[in-house]
Image (cartoon, rainbow, N blue to C red):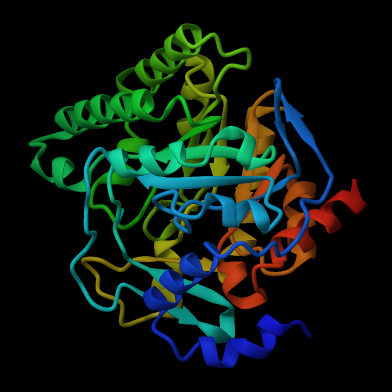
Length: 359
């Protein structure tokens, strides 16, 4: 048993949000936890030094990129980044552990220091200092601005304009972008993802803008644009293959994205594991209970999109073998967040080593 597992009984006594802030502070210390395992994966010219990364939500504001690099991560998904600061949902509690299930529950709601701060933090870590670690910028529409949109068409316009702005601000530092319209903690967000207008109203203009930025900066490798998917089509209904095809096939036909991240947190699991959850803002569960549904979704997405699109699997990777399961289900890469809470920061390197041995 490693030192973290010995310390976890004490760590779990801390409030979850405070423990998260403490973890970010610890990652600013110049201590290398693990050398990056050598299992390079290249997709259309973009090389990841290994297949295991840190999921969005862990380092929302790019505050500890060097520390994440020292964990041995192949990549990190920063964000969700917003056009301006947002304190998130003003409720309590906003985050807690479900220890027996090795899960996390949160309803933070897109907390962000805003794109200017994130841009500054990324610029403070030049590419050479990343040692080959890929930076993915997760971007989304500002919840406060979405609330002011009078209808769906206006909300789509907000999403388009804000994400095109975010792409312009972050392009110099980002190796890829992830569009987040699947968080359960921003009212109305998931309905935008399932809108029949999403490809033409948001994704095509965004991808065109990023391609223009690629040309202007003489970037040799085009910057991929991925879409993050929720684990359920509605709050209490898992995806069926027909429902998933109805969302993905129009995107594939329009060629407006380069792949997908599966999956975000689950509202349905919140109602299962927290029966007294607030119906107005239930939040989402990640970690152990999400893994079966995330694996199922990864397999379905891969069967629909074929081999040409990039697919990142995320949800419930708590042990190294779980990373292998996602890759076997069809994921090219995997991401970890909740698993580090229960298995420690060394989980990233252990997953990467195990995955490399199974290739």
